[in-house]
Length: 348
Ligand code: FNR
Figure (cartoon, rainbow, N blue to C red):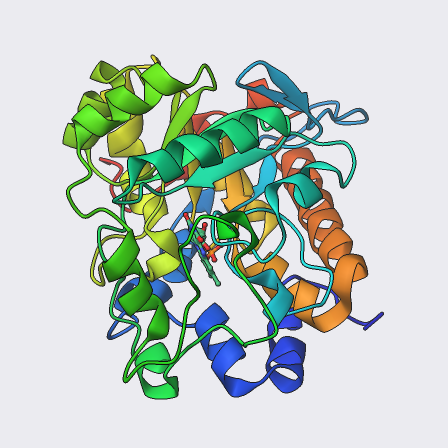
């Protein structure tokens, strides 16, 4: 484990350790896995235009998001069911196997609560109240999951939550568990419980029941960015759900600039999908993102080496990002500009 030198190396270790059903659930994407590969490939098409002979003896990678100071623009995305990876579990998805309160009490740090909207709106109100009470600072409303994407590995494995685990946020709400079915148990569960009629009016409703800022997670187009700004959201997360929903949507890093232009600086824009290197973080910031989230690297590190692995993932990304800044001639997040990169869509 000491020899791990980049975040991608944890995946092979996790694959050896985890039952096939669990590894496949974490790793895979929708249908042909085109977007899954594209989320990575797209970063490799963006090149640096580094500046030299800048005094980079001091570099500050801290930043502010939604009014909160954070030590680096890299955050952990909500990913479901961590206890299948490791008995301690970690950060919070709505589909968490640790409760809202357990996650809230794990120490310092800014926490967002990821939400999907259930057919029964009372459940949504109860979940929001619990998140508020537990000190979560924002709600990330996932808007790309009216149904679950077709993840063929889960269908083949007949994915179900292992019977020793429960979805802790749902306890006492009469929502049952993700049981075994003829295909993906998660797809059936979502079809039963999550409301496919969710629309912009519900986003407005959500803002009336809470003072917490709401970020919409899953925006990929200029049109939806404008609607999100109109609906009064506090921020946008450009995301394709780690390529697990609609296959053949563009890589998020390809969609980012269109979203940035449509947002016109009125709300902060974040990105997730395929971030595996500090250079990826820099590229996203150069295209205008206020910060990024990482999904699978955290889950694989958790499976491979528990809390130590997750800490190391965050440390490696921090070190790589800081080095990228030094080698590009940037001393602060503010100094990272569009001129520090070139993309295939730049005009000559
Ligand atoms: C996810 N993601 C996700 N998103 C969400 O809003 N609610 C959820 O419960 C989950 N669960 C989940 C489980 C697993 C195993 C994965 C891999 C992903 C999507 C996640 O928040 C994020 O958008 C992507 O994971 C980012 O892409 P990378 O970093 O995994 O490439």
